[in-house]
Each structure stands twice: as structure tokens, then as C-alpha cells.
Image (cartoon, rainbow, N blue to C red; front, side):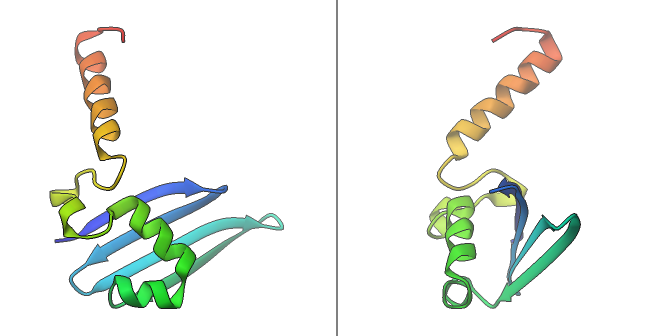
Length: 101
């Protein structure tokens, strides 16, 4: 199963991709007016925690502590999953039916 998440953290764009082959985290930021991209790859979460504890923290925030919080088929996962799903559902309802919140 492959999971991905893209979000903004401290003005930086972070993309996390997890697949059976490992975890890849890319961070894009503007440095002195120039876009700078950094990428970190790890075989698994434990290696990511050793290599870069801060990126591991972001990974855990997005995907949770383990497979119990997994987001199947590119869905929403992690600690904010319920609120994110709620917001997505209401947006779809509003877009399709014109119902205000």
C-alpha cells in the first residue's frame, strides 16, 4: 500500500510518501529567494527516526503511530482524520447541493 501526504509546515512544503520500498520525505522552502528542495529517504519509520527526528515527528503526525491509523487507498489518516473527513464531506455537500454550513 502506498500513502502520500503533502502539507505546509513553518512555511515549507512537505511531501511524505510511504510505500513497501520505504519512506521518502521532501521539504521545499524559499531560501534567499531561491527554492531549495531537500529529500530524505529511509527504509522504514525506525530508520527515519534515527536519520531525522524532526521529519519523523511530521511523518507520525500525518500517518499515526502504526498501521492502525493507516489510510487505505490514498485516504485520510493520522490524528486529524475524523475532522479532515468531516470537512471534506461538508465541502462535497455544499458543492453539490449549495447547502451552507
